[in-house]
Length: 243
Image (tube, rainbow, N blue to C red; front, side, top):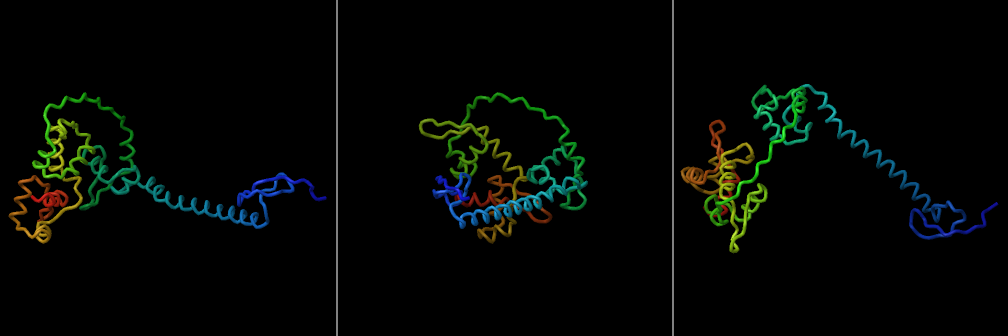
């Protein structure tokens, strides 16, 4: 015996209102019912694919967790930090490592576990000392050969104290001097380097002119084998401002 009731419902597939014969009818037509079924089946397949992708992605991490010896890159993946941070831990003595070959540093998994056994010691926060000496932006640009835009980035990235007086930007002198002393002498964070020959070819200047600019402007450099490498970013910045 067919139902004689009529109720207004909303199709759960197309969203249109329709007259149904029961209070539990979900779709307005056979077409919507079929499309909903296919969409549900497709969704199940998509979810299964995502789970498979997730499983494959986590496989390398599971392998790393059971390895006894790890490279620096593998350590960085395992503890979720950069390679540079791992090297800093090694150089500071906090993480033990062994150099098997040139450019081949190995860390034991047990040493990583011991690294996290150390209690965290919070360093008491020092009260900031009042700043009494300032540079104007122009003085910093002339002394350290940086553009105004780059100077603003340095101030923001390093929380360097600043103020405005009579419409001029004033920046803490000791903080700026300390920043450039550290960055111009610490080469560990520099990635891109020029050889002297590459600078000669790019800028058409002599070796004496290159070394003169390097020494006059305290541009970071290092010796690798028989080659002298010069910081690409610092040397390019020098030419951008016409020095």
